[in-house]
Structure formats: C-alpha cells, structure tokens
Length: 449
Image 1 (cartoon, rainbow, N blue to C red):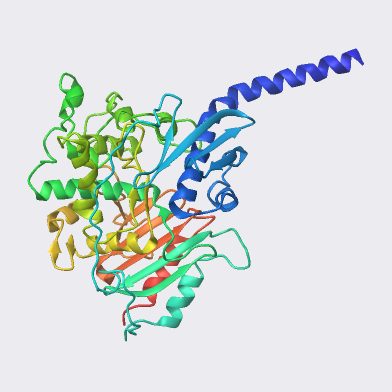
Image 2 (cartoon, rainbow, N blue to C red; image 1 turned 180 degrees about the vertical axis):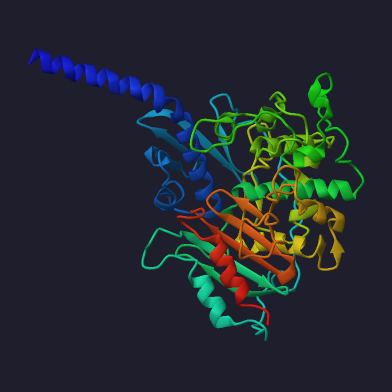
C-alpha cells in the first residue's frame, strides 16, 4: 500500500509539473480570449452566453474557460479552474475592451462622433430594401444551390457558415444566414479589420497628408537601423521586424491581443531581423503599429477616433460597424471590427469600384490598385493589408480577385472581372472544414453568359 501511495503521489506531482509547464502559462490567454469574446458577442450582438460558448468559444482549450456576464455592470469575466480570471468591459460606441487589474474603469473616455448615412436608397448604397429585380444573366437556381452548399445541414458542424451575401452588378442577388443570425447580426471580422486600417491610410494619402514611401514617422526608430522602414513596408507586411504569429501557441500575436495594454507598441519595440522589403512576414502587430502611427497623426484623441468613421466607415453607410480599442485607446486595427455581413459587403463594393462610392471618390483609384498589387516576396499572396489570388491560391477563381480575410474564415471577396462581391462569415476555416475554392467557383459559375 505504501508503495502504491508513493507511486500515486509521484504521478500527481508529475501531473502538476506538466500542468505548470504546459497549461498554466496559457491560462491568462485562454481566459482573456474567452472574456473578450463573451463581452463583445453578448453586448454588441445580443448573443446569449450559451450560444457564444457553443459557437464562438468552442475552440480547443478556450472551451476550458468558465464565463459569466454582469448585465448591470456591462462586463464579462472568465477563468480556468478558478485561476487567472480576466475581465472585459463594454462601453456603448466603443465595444468591448479586455482590461487588467490596473485599468481605471471610472476614468472618463471619449466616443467617436459619428454621422451615420441616412438616405432613401436601397441596399447597397442605402439601407432600404430593394424590390426584387431578376437579372437575365444570373442562374438563380444554380446560385441558390451554391449558397445553400456553404451551410451545414441537419445540425452539422463541418462548414459552420454563419452568413453569405452576394452582390453582382451593384445588386444583392443572394443572401442567407444560419440559425440565430440575421441581416442585422454584427459579426467580428477578425483580420478583415486590417483592410479597414489600410483604407484609413488611403484617405490620408488622398488628402496629401502622408507619403507612404517615406520612412515611417516613428520617433523611437530614428537612431537605429529601423529608421529606414517606410509606411509602404509596414502596409506590405515587409518591414523586416521580428514577429511570430501562430495562434496554436503562446506567441507575439496572442500575447499582444490578450495581455498588452498598448498593442501598437508591441511591434514598435521589436528589433529588425531583415532589411526592409526583403522578407514578407504576416504580422497583426504591424497593423496595430499602423493604427498607433495613425493616432499620432492627429493632435487630439477625438480627431483620431472620429477619422476612422468619417473617412470611410460612415461615408459608405457601414452604420453597424464598431472598431474596438485596446486599453490605451488605440483602435485594434488588426482584429476587432464588428459589422453586419451587409455592411462588410459595402466595404468590398467600395474597392470593386476603385474607391468610388455612388459617385464620390473616397479613395484614389491608384490606392486601390496599390492594395491589390502583390507585395515583394509574398509570392502573389498579399498586397497592402489585402490578400490576393494573383498567385493562384484559389485555382478555380479569377486571378484578379483580392480579398479581406479573417480568423475562422471571414472573407470579403472582390472580383473586378466578374463585377462581384462575395461575403462569407463563419467559425470554420478552409479544408478539412470549408472549401472556399469550391464555394467561390460555384457562385461565380451562376452568373454571366
């Protein structure tokens, strides 16, 4: 019996050591992800806790978190095994923010001043419903089948699509939502937010207020080799700065999103690994650094907050969109924009029409061309905060396709040669889950003669 107890004790010690070395360091990130997800999903989109836990948070290890919502206090908390409790607060107009113990929740804060588009136009240039108009070159039976195929049937969880919106020749030709979601549901775009950040720089460039080919205005770099990094390098993810983005482990990206108070400074403080424009490396830290740089272009915080909306978002009637902030008040330009699928499609339409929105040139045509031109060393996969099909990632889709892309398979697809925008949102990425190439191929095959 003594021998058995010794062996049992040894096994328990080994288990605790294993937990300490492998799981415990992740608990802060797990509970941080979960608390932020619950606060945003519940207070931004009115999702009940059980739906968030079953659909948004049913990710390996994230599902270990125990969550709670305080309706009166407008916050959510999460912990794992009672350890590492994290809190995310909700503020109307700003969305949810993951905070630490030092964050002063009583401190006054500024809100973006918004002028939301109101007109009598039908969607997509307004928010009124359009009377059904059948287009002669659309095979609606084939289109309906293609869209239906994007969704699971009979309660399955393989494809996990939440929404599909298809625009063709400026007209809504297909739209479908999963159970629990509607055209008014706000859905997180994750890294599609990067393309929103890029568009803000596009407006500044159009206004002549920045030159992306000059060294980035980062005072902290002026006395070292990073002084040669340009805004162009940052927009292209080609700065040469050190960064690791791997969501299966603790890395620069996960520590930034779920621990950092000022997310823009995380990439700013990284050393150079390569010379600029020689080594493409996808980095959410880079986009948050761009957001911080954008913030520094304005004299006041209010001007910075207002610009994101007045420059693009509200200009094109994305009335539902909210871009969330980090604890320092900088927009999380890498990951945290929420909007309805219809509003996401409006953003795609802006780029489909080369920066023109219903007659107003919001972005220069040259900027849209720039965003859709392959970055050096990306093998035709990436432009300026947009992904590209120039390298043939999707073999059955036109090579001129460029797109916004986010975690778990969020996509705004722009196909100029087909005069088409396709939005797909869900909680499952590519094969063995969702077949984007097959889906896009089927939708495209339903239009044109």
